[in-house]
Image (cartoon, rainbow, N blue to C red; front, side, top):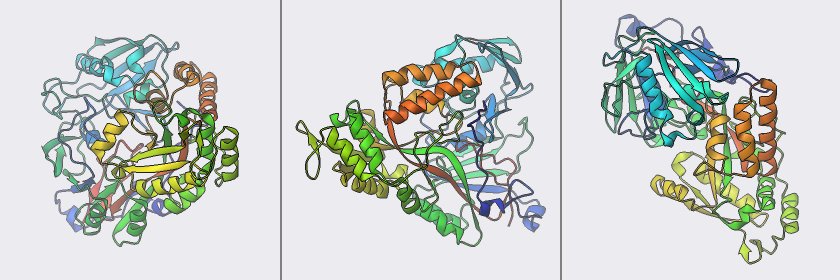
Length: 524
């Protein structure tokens, strides 16, 4: 799935690269006496959210990095945008793109002793392929049949070529495999770890002694639930946890990362992400003004992205001018971000008939928009909302900020009772495919923005049979997203983790949804 515009994940920043020696991650040379004496290796990782269960069969679990230790996919997404064997040792895709054949790894068992074979794999694959809740995954709509042709072979037939198939098979949920002998929702997988205990304060994992990949180094993984961001930082500084960070694990605010860089005994790792933060518009059921392309374009012109990136995000984020960053497969070729052009925004609104002092209006409709946010979803959400409101207000677009708790926010979004909200694209391995199919097609309930052009263009890109036609199809999508101002890009978010220097061999995963911990050691 390479492309002339596809770029691999950025390596660690210069400060973090100095740490990436010997173990391609955090390495401190010889182990100390504690490690050498055979003491138990316990790695303590902070979690932002409690989990009532650990399941890949639904969407109730948000702790992807915990799921990644317990459940495995057929293939894994790699840092260079390719795929590596996991429960499938090898695979072939026919020249016409209609048949995928997977050779399963022999001798694999779930942690309850149930063998993993082609019949089990087929049943589990059909579980999510046939579930209408998974309609945003394109494989659910193009699968004709899945067959177990022998004990270790799966033959998957499609009704049309579907290029992102392997991307979807690398996801954490709902596609990873659960033992058929386990009760529904029970966390029994084939991965390097199994669940010892789970409650609202802590999740404890211990090694799967029969894991096909060998014995993992940590004897115990303890995920401590610490909802408050400042408390997580304090816990790391006090040596109560070893690791914090990650968008879906224990998010680290930018100012906290800066403070930790000055903390003895702590290393901060930063890398470029494949995720853009957007200001999205509800053009369907929000203020009718948002159906006017001139209003959406004026919003885009009115925002000072470089100022937001440098000021609010302290230079750790990059100003974005496209819905997706350039480093997703077949990604756009963004123009450099410039400062806000308030004069152009005002002229555009004037020409479109949105006039008046203060908050503009047209035909009796005021250009007053409701921005909803859950401050817990993004550390900078509250400050960012005020910056956006101020900058849009400068051109006559009024913004009311509605801060909601997570429950009320979810209700407002589900009911589409808002005008504006912040939204981050999914990032690898989902993108650009899943964000497009889930959020920019009219057929998908809860989409961010839709138009007849996007409805036509997105399926063409997903089914394109060769690199040249695929790139051309995605280029057409990027043009439409920009011309219609389907969303207002803000910044490309950074990946940030902080680790105590007693941790050796820690590496960022290829994505924010996985975290390789089997080779990590803890000293001291």
